[in-house]
Image (cartoon, rainbow, N blue to C red; front, side, top):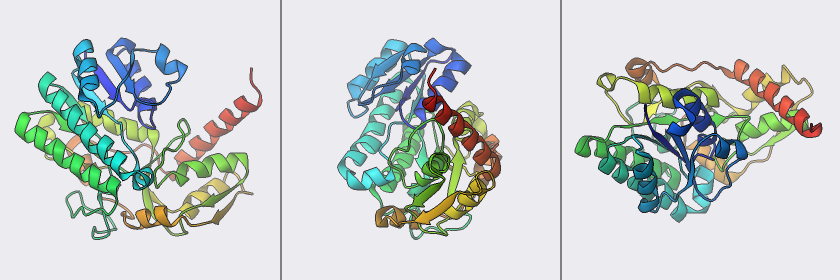
Length: 322
């Protein structure tokens, strides 16, 4: 039975991946690890939890050694918009933290999943149907850190035989976790505001196309890639994965099918708009489909229906506590 550690276990992806892995592998076989956030009661009660600092290699090594971990899902990261406000912290967590995880993985022979991002692309990258292998010249510290991460993971695989794997996530949408400082956070906020106030003011301009993905598909991508036959993988790290390419008004139009009175307005945030403008409109994920069978289950319509249904239920639960 695999013994898995999830860093960033209280973050956007980790808070949903951890319980899913515990259902698949057994609660005691999945060790949650987080830093500077108080984990919720369900996470603490459903299996082991450790406070770690990925920039301190000793804290990472101690958990791996104590629990005899053989697979690490390394999800701890500072996101794009937050990274521009704190570039030194972004570099420390995203690069030095990953380096520490890879060093521990090398020593203890662990496999490592590390998510990259469409943020690795920049203004010089082809914006439409962006290829798997293309120019990556990002102009954000987040993007630079993620390109560095892809190269580090490739290096540790080729030089030391560490089984590294990863995907380039687009914007991720979930009703379970709050946005965490990313450029694509509007695509989560818009659904909550639609339920609560029937209106939303978007910080990206009309027509800003970006790839998005519903969280269940993102979780499935991580698990499926880590379970894939290594002999089928021509690539290792930075697999493009795609589900839908949408603009703010595209999401709004789908919401209006359920909530006709919903209104969308715009007040542009120059920082996040400049970041979004440097990213692709759509990406080509044929390598992931061919090499390990990637395919998304949700499109915009099915995601929107599911998001609104669950947010409505959450809102009603808060309004009418048991």
